[in-house]
Length: 70
Image 1: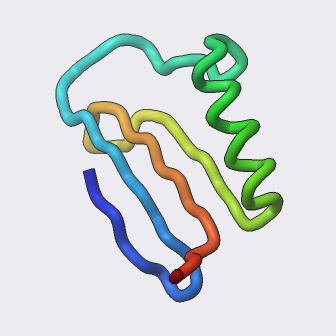
Image 2: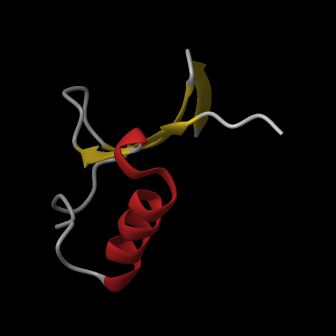
């Protein structure tokens, strides 16, 4: 897991570097669909969600949101 500030954005990355199953389908699974919907509701166009297999192997999920400092 990694969290990093990129200007006015917060980038959260989770990497599983083990060989695993096929790439999950973002259109399946209620939990994943709800997570993406909540991000879009909270951050609108200021959020991003990516998942897939990096060239070095494993599986990675990356979420970017507008940075809010309280």
